[in-house]
Image (cartoon, rainbow, N blue to C red; front, side, top):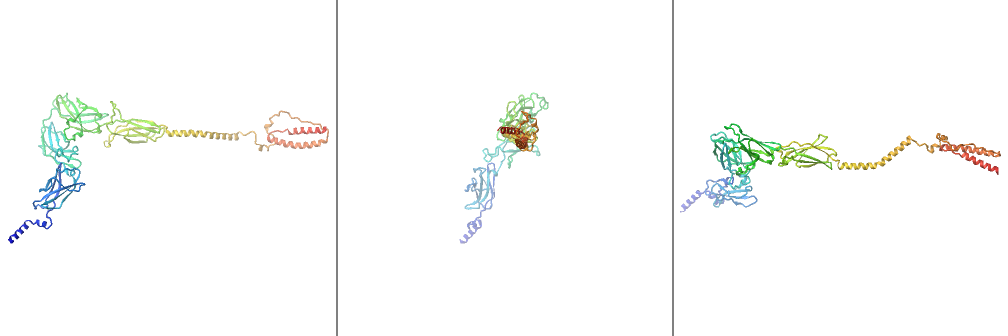
Length: 569
């Protein structure tokens, strides 16, 4: 019995050698290998490889952790999975949030170490799945309808539904060589096909700049017999002044199609191009172009104000009674590229602070509406002094601005042109008419004028004094005084010549005296001698002063009277 028991024990150990290390406190389970997250649209798949394929009854469990949360949560659909893949599409997370995953192998109470996956977002891991395609044949065209990738209520592409573009490969079913690739909208047409021919195609979605989708299955369809009334071709749009001219080619009045068609009329429609990017049918959103309905010529004219800033699609259809052609190929055009900018209107006024204020306005059309009102414009202004060739260029978004710090009483000129605000279009108008204006004197000139007047007023007394002094000097030099100073006159004893010309009022006569007493003669002679000396001195003095003295006569007279008095005594 003991021998049998020992044999049995040996058999169990040999039959399950991987259990022994576990019983000894070790582990035989290894972490899963080559773990990866595979996401297509809204389908989330986690897949991996077994590390020990020979070990049976091993399951796998995965957990996740979101950014800012330290708790590891069970990943739905990935608990105790016996396969090497699991679907966790039911996980409700923001596709732009960071998430971490980890997975391990389990066998009973025995588990492997965790295999950790670096943090990622669901969106960056996601691939664009193959779109669903629906085809319709019409004349020499195929109408294609493409459904958005993912489910109808897709969470992954909810914010990008209008950002998808689609790449289409098409070829004739009978030909294995020629293929052409086109970029199409979710609802679009493929033109220039042969009638009664089977074409095959496949489509993939793209989300620029990095995501390319998976091709759809191949779809095939046969085009019908050509329509008797062909559509217009070669649609083009030209601009002139404030109007658009829409032109197209058509065998109007020719016999190309078997007979003349003098009764063919045309109509043209337009559509915002962005509506093509929105999923769904946009056929009911086309609008009639004014002046382009029931026209008999291969062109029509309409105002540029019909289209504001943006990108548009235009199509044209031919009609002959109750027969209509299919719509022409839709042509795209950018209103900014087609618009013709007219020169602005400039007015300029002078202000009191030696500045010029400039006003810019748009030209007026026949209905008195500004032609350029639908476009954000900038203005290039050229400014210069009228007597100089030096020009000053500035750019302004405002239509009212001022040139300051100019020269007073100087004429300046200005002209301007309009530019589209986005410089990449390089669209500009011609220059406006040149407008010139003269600056005012300004406060500075007035200040100088007042200062000049005050200076003149205060300088008048100074000028008068200087003139008076100058006249005195001139009079002293060229017209001296007739009477010399007394200091000079004393050196001249002779009477001046002009005094000889003066006549005295009385004629001088000699006086005679009868002297009876001879004793007095000597006294008289002595006296006379003294008087003669005195007379000489008086004569010199009178000559110096310019006056004559009769002192000798009066003196003689006194002497005679005294002498007579003595005799009588």
